[in-house]
Image (cartoon, rainbow, N blue to C red):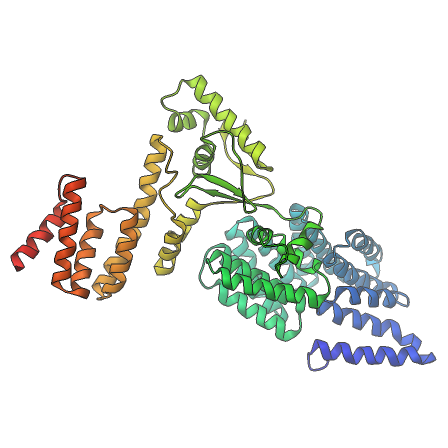
Length: 531
């Protein structure tokens, strides 16, 4: 390549190709030049052109070269969605492996990419595990690195984050060039995005910028897709739209949408967002491309229970027949592996056993009917019930809120407050739902109080006042919050404003609760003494 510049390299090789094509003696060089052009165009994400040049290269290739050329073309065809042709090329490559056994790891890697493009998760995982093992045996560090990074991507998509971190750690020591390093940043950012970590955007931007600088247009488009996903998770819809526009722009530059789908199909939140775009939206083309791919993407299912009770699949509300289906589903999501006795006791304590059992089983059928891929099977081994979402990307707002709170810091609390849209299942009247409602609200209040306490000690009274006001929307009668509200008001606006605030609080508490909590009673006496 010319100074590592893929565009200049392809231009120089095109000139060499034209020169060789025009001279009788140059015909022998076309196969070699074609193989180089195929490699360069493949790296640039121009898989159509690459596949054509690899075809020319095959015409004069020896058996050893056939393995690499067939495998390289199969990689291009996989990205283009031409799966049968890719499979045929791989079979041809395998049949020639005896001439170059060290190529086995690369051939196996391409087989993994093919299955990943098809959406066959189990086969993909097995093939990449085999690739990593073959690469170690052949001391093929680069292929091993990419195999581990793809395993990281699969585990991340499935939500198995600890396993994903293990593959990422192994890949870190195997990054031998800038391209591999950028792939590492991409997977690190995607993993952190899934985990809700604030550093995710930094790594995704770094990966995308490097891909663009290296001329790796396909991978740059992947980076923009992951950035769009991250911005959606962060509630930054404007930035998500901008990132999707960049991805769509790359899609048109590459000349096909299929190379983007190998990543997009594993980002169901983003797919759901794209499905809701107007038909004439610039980025809508990405969703239209996806509809042409067999298997498409996992269904993005949201269980919304904070301030509401509904299930949304790919952006559309699911119609349920049973009034308590969302409540039962929420219980099972929070308590997987529950026995029938536990479920009936917690959710239907006042019903007869027969009536409660019948209702529970009707809910199971209701969920399975309404959401393709969801079921609540009975385990004969453990005698319990759990939610199974085959092919679903299932998200529950309560779990996301708990994850945000556990991440800690001001950012985690801010995200939790965005997620908290109101009381848990506000219309549910079971004792379990009431207890959950109180526990969830208190978890937010407790974290908020700890944050306010730290700010107050540092004299950050304006932040205290703002957060106290937001938390009082959740629990207006919490005496600690009301006390901070008064004290922060005094620090910022003076004693007169604080007196007015406490007067309003006294009036509200006495009218609605009949008495003033001890902390506020003492605070009122404190102001009376000052007067």
